[in-house]
Length: 366
Image (cartoon, rainbow, N blue to C red):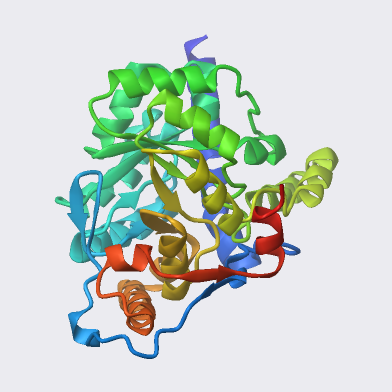
């Protein structure tokens, strides 16, 4: 009996490692970006200031988030862990977070509860970022299955986290060949963690967006921040569809194709959530690719902006590529601020913008 349990445990670990590896390989090598939709950020036009009355060198990108000052309104969004291939990526991302003083989220850490080997693929981030703001991560589906407060505390301790994020991925769980689309009682469990944990609890989507109704319920549950993670970037339905192809699961393949572009575009989700919440911090993410788009999201009401795919691509290449991308991203953000006459992030938040096209029609509809 014990031998059977040991065999089952090893089999489960191999399944987890393979799934996590494919979660890196598919976006990098096969592509799973949005096909027929976008972030809608192309419909946000910032108003040029021909008389900015500031010097580029005086522009300050620092901001305060979770009662802590960071160098820029940027977060390395939750990506990976739980497979040997993730170790090097999280090591490099940790170094980036430490060097540039920006927060970093880890991938879902359930795998780390199952073995010390897998736990080290997450904790390597803290090893390389001893003073950075690290965000632990667990899924809503795991809370529905009965993940305990004690187990969540172990996840937090795994990386000595400064905050916890609970990711909501009902679409991904639905398409994933081994997915667990169980979401009964998740909101109650979120509220329970808010009450029992001595650190900020955030909630994020993974690419399908947060609606105003969900944002209101999360604010009532007491979460510290909402990461909207709208559609228009990497499609996790697409990633799981590709995995379902390999598993020859015809139903999952069909569902992945059908719902590839399902979700609320990032700009729409951001505007909806901003209108819905009164005190909860808002993190904009979902298909952000450059500093201009970061500036647009801040102008629309985001407190911070999170990015995953661009950091994943460059981290997979080399540390130099990763740092080079970060320098370019900051230059893009500062350049946009200069062209708006925004000397700091507070001024950027009050920049004038015009909504056009499909975005204007959507947000201005009754």
